[in-house]
Amino acid sequence: MLKAIALCIPLACLALPSGAGSAAENGRGGAAIACLYMVVTADHDDALACNAPFDSEHEANYAAMHSEMEDYIRTNARGDGDQLLAALKRSASHNPGTPREDICEKFQARKKAIEGMTSAGSLEGIREAMKTPGNPLAGGCI
Image 1 (cartoon, rainbow, N blue to C red):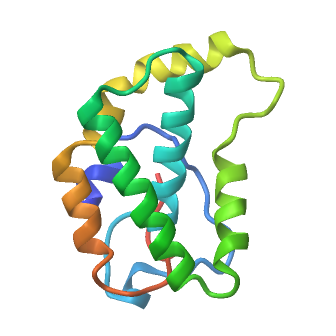
Image 2 (spheres, rainbow, N blue to C red):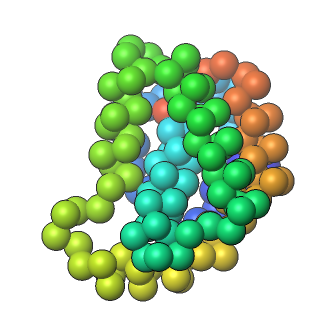
């Protein structure tokens, strides 16, 4: 399930920190929870910046997904989970010099993928993956 979710989001998250580990390391295949966290955080921030907020269903799924992934990352991080979350949030942010028009143009191109990421089915797939404790950096990134 996570591989399908990860592949639908075009180039939102290109690299993981070195020493991220492998999917086999924690028994999960697919995208790293940390990568998914960065993607949904960036997409939500872009939606707000572009005055295109998620509809109520996708917003509720996003809020649950975001909170649950933060808990998973805090609990399973190798080292300080809060520091890792802060780094992931920084990575999800745009360069301060990026023109809003560029952000919004790219956001509109990704909108369908974002809706897929914040669907009830995706939320359940991510919840299923997080049932198994493991390194939140282990796995692929888009």
